[in-house]
Length: 573
Image (cartoon, rainbow, N blue to C red; front, side):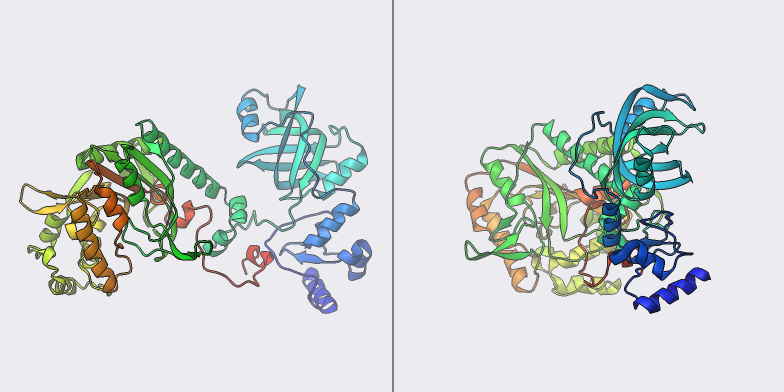
């Protein structure tokens, strides 16, 4: 009650200029102190021009400029030039691995000293002469014991560090490794306890940062507070490393192809547009690297791949981000069966490498599920499955029976937004009738030719011609799309013409005519199998992340109110 009254009094006296609310945190020293028994005059006497404080809910701390001023007043350089200590720095992870099982409880190894650096995660004052710090470095934590009896510096140096080093600060220290009487592995500081960079805002370690809007707009804070978020990025690194090593071991050549071009092709998607001032022309960001990679196969590179970013100016949801990562490879003298086998092999080996098992438990859906990546995966023939669900044969799609297909959708209460093209209507039918069946790894194959303008057509035993293509779905998400590549330049031109007609009818995602690619095909593309994987979605499945933004370091976010402050963020305003 006294503190609340004091807050009201200070707010009236200083017109609200001295306070800013942040998350709950408790500090007990000069630079970040509780103010339950201080007055306005004592604050002014103590801090002069820096008489600016922040209400953190449980306590009061100095605003950033006041904290820096206080450090300098104490003779502490807030941002010193880094100097390596005489004692070599050892990463915290290595300290734990090396000493956890070697040090006896209640003992120290005084035969040598070690130096570590990291961020102060917590600070606990046992007395004015004994302070306990928890440090985090590369997501690994270790305790540091600051005891006046062990510290070789003088009383002034000890008091300066004890009072001014706070939670969130980045420090470097040197001492003996040992274990406390409770068995906690610790560094007992003996010398060189230095501030490397202060933290000028309260970090909500206790209250946490749960609101997705605030988490993903402030990833630096998210990674500091939510340690699992950083572990997801490490698994993402492992997935990308696995894909690269898998393809490298099979003699694929990794390349980089242009992100900017005069027209974006290789996939049905709406591109981002920009302008190259130096060339005085409009350009587009790529939606897929496919056409470039196939030109490399024409040029004699029989096995080629690219891991990189694609950009599609489309919607954002749990499975889509405008900027995303894919892996595409192309292999000459291979067919769809080769890709079936290679995909099963890669996913099974990947699951085992990343998670330790080919069967994984994941929360990627709204309810926990178990996914098995054991070969073989289920296969569904799209046209036959749809006809079973509909209870009647589908019309001849080459005759573009748009009215008949829309009537089928109406019968099943399916709304198809304009423009109404065969690919868009068929995609709606597939997503409604088939994709929900694909929780366990499932290949969808036998697509209508009209849905796959870059795929070679194949004839089934039934006599029906379909695209030489499959998609792999896991947990309802499409993660792989693969083709037997169309290498007939005449047919390729015809299919581009049909796509152009769809574009003229309002389908912004239809592929543009690419005469240069058709010209390249005339030099001869060998029989080639092409394969693409959505890396972000694979990471979602293997980490149990329900939203694609969880597996991206910095997902795309809508612009927020520019007046929102850092302290508003951590106070959950």
